[in-house]
Length: 134
Image (cartoon, rainbow, N blue to C red; front, side):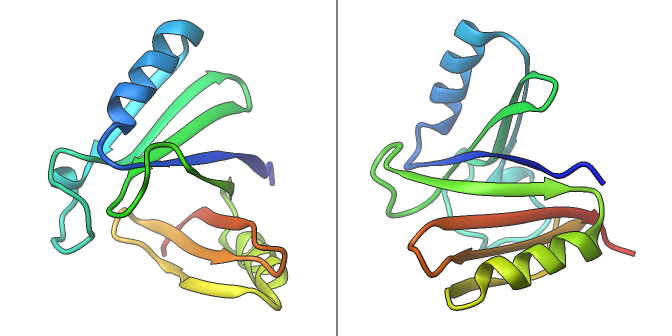
């Protein structure tokens, strides 16, 4: 399995503007999903905010971002590990989160893959995402 790692930047309402700016400078392919695009309510965030944005600059190089309540404009940066094999991602989640603080268990997400989030024992924020739910 090809596992990839990139940064995930948290914003408070400016993720779309930031991603559009990065896209204008760096080129690549930009995809944005807003909270209003999601099938379920109560995910947090304003309807027009970015639930997930991804700028693929070149093969294996990406910038990801989202808006969420309480962010202070680009001040939160997490590491995201993502790929296709849910079992491999679960092993990574279990290993990296050991001794840390799990804020969202690795489980099926509303968008069809698996997702989990935690802060590791060194204070680094992590997101693990991928593997299609069966």
